[in-house]
Every structure is written in C-alpha cells, then in structure tokens.
Image (cartoon, rainbow, N blue to C red; front, side, top):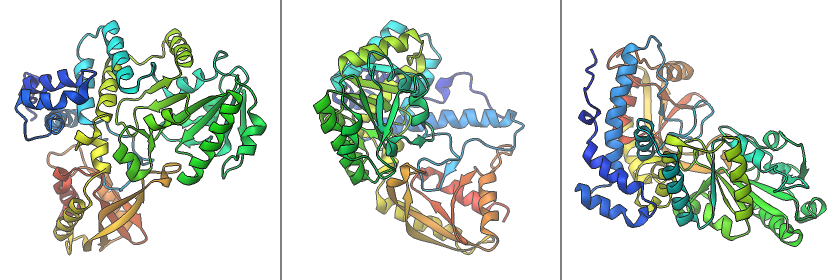
Length: 449
C-alpha cells in the first residue's frame, strides 16, 4: 500500500528549495550562488546537490505511486551502466535535478508570459551579450534558416556535416524541407577551401557548419577555418549548429566539445544551440548572434507559434544559467562527465567484490574501459571509464536480458540495468550510475539467489 502524502512539502524541504530556486531564477546567478548557500544554511554543501536529493525523494514517491497502479511489467526508468551518455535505446539525456525541479514548479502554476520572456531575454543577453530567440524544436530552427531574408541565394553545407543525430534529426532533410535550396560540397572526409570557394560567392548565402560531424576533431577544425575564411571574403553568413555545445571550459578542454562563446568570438555569425544534450535541459533550441538575423528568426518563430514557452522556457533559462557556473556543479551530466576517475575505480572495486563468485557470476573484476560518448557522430568523443567486467556462469546475453528486464510491479524488485557486452563478457560501467544506486546493481545481479 502506497502512502500518499497530503502535501508535497512532506517530501521536499519547500522553504529551502524555494530560496534556492529564487536565486537560480536571477540572471546574475554566478554572483548569487554563494549567497544562496548562506540563506538556506548550506555553507558546507552543494545547494544543487540538496536540490537533487529532494527531487530524488519526490521522484521515488511518484515512481512508487505510478508503479503501484501500473499493469505494465516494464519500468521505463533505467540505470545506465553502458558507459555511453547517448545510447540509441534511451530517450535522450536526463534533465539535471535543478532544471527538473524548476520545470515541475513552473508547470504547476500560472505563468506570466511577458515576465517569463523578459527574464529569458535578460538572462541570455547578460550571459551571451547577443540577442536570442528561443525555439521549440530543431526542425523549426533549421527551417527558419531558409527564410528569404537570411539566405535568399541558398545554404551551403559540407557533406560531412549533413549528419543525422538521434534526438536532433537529419540535418540534410530538415534543411531541404521548405525550398530545397541546399548545396552540398566536399566529400565524406570533409570540404577544402577550394570546395567552399566554388560554391560560396555571395553575401546572400549562408554556410552551415555542424558539430559533431562525421569528421575527427582536427579535420573538423580545419574545415571550419576554411569555411570562415571564404565567408569573410564573400560576406556570407556563417551558421553553426552546436549539438555538442557547452559553456564549461573544463568540459571543452577535456573532451573537445564545442565552446559556444569561443565559436561566436572566432567567426560564427549565428549559433543554434540545442538545450537537451550536454546542457541537460528541456528540448528546445537557443538561437543567438547577429542581431538582424536573430530578429528575423524570432519574428518568424513567433508567427508560427514556435517559441519556447511556459515551463519549458523557465527550465531552459535555468539550464543556461547552470551551464555558466559549471565549476560549481557536482551533479547532473557535467558532474558525471567530469567524475573523478579514482572514485569510479574505488566504486568498481567494491562492486566487483560483492558480485564475484556468486550464483550467476563466475568472476567480477574492476577494469579500465574506453567507451564512445554515443553512436555516430558522437563516437568521436571517447570516455575513459571504470567498469566491472563480468564473466557469467550462463549465457552473457541471458544475463544482460535479465538485468535489463527489471520489474516495476513488485515492491523491492530490482531496477532495470542497461549494460554493455564484449564477446563473452558483460560490463557494468559506472560513469553514469549515481553512487547511491550501486546497491541496485547488486540486487539486480544477485536476485533469485
């Protein structure tokens, strides 16, 4: 029997969270984080970690309530022990806890559209120094690039950049939806300066660059440099779609992710930044850069009722602000990507001891493992993880299937765990597993013993 709290405050320390969220909702968030700590008495703790803990409590209650009334034998929530952030079987990247809390808070109250749009405008201009349009979907954002006022003579793109990215879409298909005025240059291994010179000859054209693409990082940088040089000579507009865009210099240096501000400072006229990948926000696109182009795209999105609004816009503002104080964050996607390798190793060692020589597992040992961030084109980014390598007593596929099956219908049943297989061995990778969920893996792997 699930006990239903009469008030959500029984689960969430509402007063403390309210103070934190009030600060997070301010555009000058970098200078206010420490003040928020003092206000709620979390001087020696991470306030965002506290938000995560409270949100986890609320989510657990909601999960138990949904599970108790569900007749499905499949739990849609899953522990990601594959080692990859972007996996074809997963529905995107989870929101960070603070963003999710703001989304829920905004979704359960009436919102002043004018005030929300004003807050979004002020926060974006303070952080980016450029006018911004907030668009609801990648499809609409790319269609807006084809406006007559932006690129009346068409769009030029490298064949290596005309990629299909799960969760974003097929760039080539979306750019040809309205007019078909798309010119592809170069080959699968990139476009040279001569290729760009042949196709780009007018200020009425736009060059579209995409990251990540099919190219290695160094070749992609060379192609970008050549495209920008040609654009400067012809006056063409340079548009960068930064699906892997981040604001954190540490993330950019460590992995090679596209640094949004650096791209603006080094030749991009317009940037399209998805919020629902490495920024761990709600689905949507920020468009910013050259004022005339952004204003035109903003007006067109408004006419098509394609602007982000309501809870999604509110959460998007928080995601943007948090991305600019990444050095303060130890939770969410940024925290997982930058997790201390020694901590991951220690956790893997402890987990291996608990799983070794059990009924279903002959051997479990901690190992270092290199894993791509996700499928093509994300596989150009490599993660150096720690995992538990398992040699099962039975078929490795059988064990993987049982771990993935889980069971949401019985109290105390193990959560579904997604793993990776290589040959006859199974890997439980801890990069994207929260430390408090390690015991869930033990329960799942030893259930029925």
